[in-house]
View 1 (cartoon, rainbow, N blue to C red):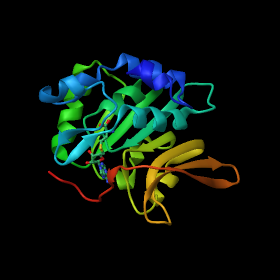
View 2 (view 1 turned 180 degrees about the vertical axis):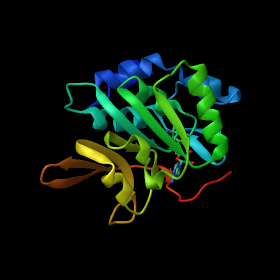
View 3 (view 1 turned 90 degrees about the vertical axis):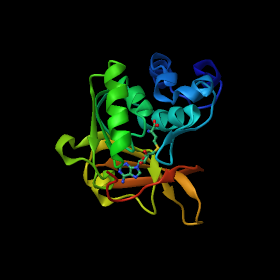
View 4 (view 1 turned 45 degrees about the vertical axis):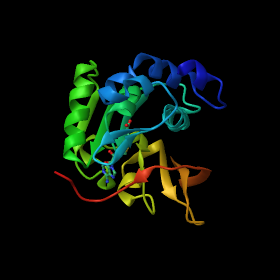
Length: 205
Ligand code: SAH
């Protein structure tokens, strides 16, 4: 899987190395294990999906692009089954990952603990509010897309930090947005079209 991803443009080698350490098959249902290393999203229950490996690699490459030191604290919105959180844990000192569906929260917490990931804290909550206790973040990455970027995420992004998230674009589709917090304010870049599950407010227990 990682060899194939390496052939795609703009992939950060550190991300690929971290992906090589995370057994993706452990994060998918047993009936889907034979598809775990294909470049496809897969159902994880509760109507949600585990992101495609190439999408995880792209998002995280954008997050650490140009950085020479390890990321400090990172926030992930939308833990799902915990796969991307496990990859992030290999790239950052601390990961806070928020999930709004209690069943997935519990699943991800178990998977990460069984995979020996010690520096990721899975939180049951509404990620649209970010997660204030671990803020500010050097990086914020969202695995679900909304109409706009929630203000709480900008408020919790450290100076020099970067946010990567899918967001509804002016033309109506969804595209990747990269926001940087600089001394002069926030810069916003809109990149390629993407297809993520919707960012929803409130909890499902
Ligand atoms: N990173 C995951 C992808 C999961 S799909 C992985 O590696 O598999 C996106 C997830 O975002 C879903 O589990 C969905 O429940 C969650 N989500 C959507 N809106 C959310 C919100 N406001 N707060 C927290 N999680 C949210």
